Structures are given as structure tokens and as C-alpha cells.
Length: 107
Length: 118
Image 1 (cartoon, rainbow over the protein chains, first blue to last red):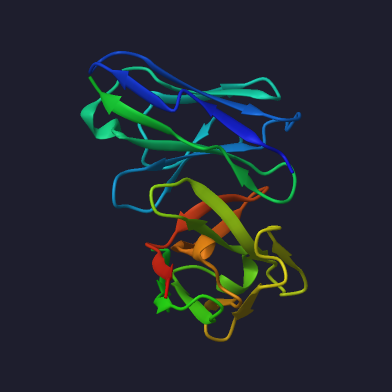
Image 2: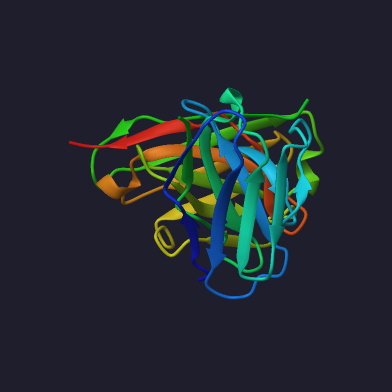
């Protein structure tokens, strides 16, 4: 199965700062990666699909990029509403697999 | 509006069984791939099982294969997950999710908690 590895485990940044979350796949998966945002006590919510397509309702400060095995979710200017855990997921092959998550905190 | 509402979570003894349900509304249920994803307390997300729109194929993670069974009733717009031979490692919130595109998960229910304990 394809292993997804996220880093860092926790990211602490000040409001307005840029936040960069990383996700590495154990093999090439093209652009078959999604990102999810999970706020405390809530279900996950699709944030990004097909590596770089933002889901409806998410502002332009969220962007995604990648290179086949290395993927990045960037929050250009961190806001207090962005406090959450972010998960990447690959859908290039079964079983679907998730990364362990990056918890974003406000400094 | 797409809605997924899980039910059936409970406290169950080790070795026991349980059936989870997910009632869907707001979309053409019969045309969508559906999945179950779980999250153990304080842990990350784990995909558990999926089923094709025509119920022809089902998919399972290695951790539940042979113990869990996914099914659907398109006439009731309801997805099911039958859990058997439960162990403490199955304690988690179980989410019903809709698959889309190549299989990202575009809608999630609020989850139902399964606790396996004596």
C-alpha cells in the first residue's frame, strides 16, 4: 500500500504568516492527492482535490502543489479560523491511504 | 444539500458485532461510490471500506478484511457497515463518506462512535 508521510506533526505560526505543510508519498501518484481540514470536534472536510483544485468554500489563501511524490499545502496568510489538523490522502491506488496529519496552531 | 447521517454506534464487548447505518439525502445516491473511514480517539484517519455504485465490488482495508462487510440499499439511500469479531483496536468514530472523481471524499457525515470494551 502507498504510505503517506506528513510533516511537521505540529506547525505553530503567527497570524498573517505563511504556513507550509508537506506530504510525501512512498511512490509516484501523479496528482491523485487530496487534502482535508478537520477542526476540533468536527468531521473532516475536503479542502483540496487533484493536488491543486480548491474545494468550494475555501479561500484563495489555500493552495496546493506537488511533483509526483512530494506535495505541499500552503496557507499564504494564516488566520485564526485555520486552526485545525490537515490530512493528505492519495487515491492513485487501493487502499486509499491518509497521512498522519499536521496540526496547525496559532502562535 | 448533501447530507450523510450515521447511526448505530454503541458500546460493545470484545468479540461482539454491530451494524452501522448511513442515511443519505440531497444527491443521486445510487450513482455514487461510498466509503467508511474511521478515526480512533486522538488519532488520524483510516479508510476502512468502499462499495461501487452497483454494489458489484467492495473494497476493504487489510485491518478489517474478513471481519467487516459493507453493503448498500439504494431504495432506501442507505449505506451499511457490518462489524464482527470486534477488538479494542476497532474503537473509533466511523464516518460515512461519498467518493468522487478518482476517489477523493467530497462529503462526510458527522460520524458515529463505536467503543469496544468489556
